[in-house]
Length: 298
Image (cartoon, rainbow, N blue to C red; front, side):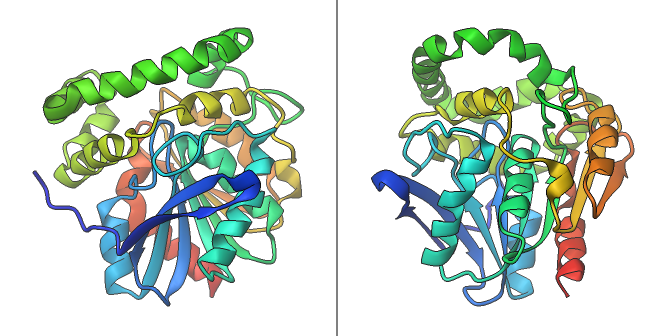
């Protein structure tokens, strides 16, 4: 198994209502900081090895953040996506981060956009990797995996608790069979994602993240879905922070058409096409993503 670069520190901070928000801190303690929001599902350790190595070599601080219901974070369903940012502000204060960039993969994309909107004086730039787009409201798009799952909207409050427990038990049950299970999943993934899973460090990251972050429950993916299907609490047209969006042209979970529709609504945004890549292709572009965001910072 590939030996991953480990976090310099892991822990949690207390946020509103006595809840906890978990994080993993990679790289330098004093360098420029990048928040890294995991996909759905995922947790604080879903940070690509390329980003971890770059942080260690180039005086960067990369912080992975557990959303509520995974890892060290207390389970909690926000009112909307924007509500998450109030907890992030407390996290940044506690970790003594004055300014930072933010990156989000897939389901982390909406939270990235919300953070950019809510903290224009604190966020220097935002990067979205195959991000989910709104599914209600004036900026919404139909289709994709979230659109398909929208038919479960009315049942979510009832099925979420037992399904969360089932997912936790299933992941524990995989245990020593994690690598084989991931290989099986990769075999039936789109060709673009198979290329990503063929990288040993990416495979090791997913196994480490899922196993380590599911010990205290795994309600975060279901909370994400519930929030994706609600109004997000802000308009992307009101984001004043520079946004750069990477998207595979073969993405079968979040169609490229979603990004092509939403990105022009963001005042300072640019779409980077990933030819031949599917939903997880952005994980292989970590160095490029960090370089672009740091250039925007300067």
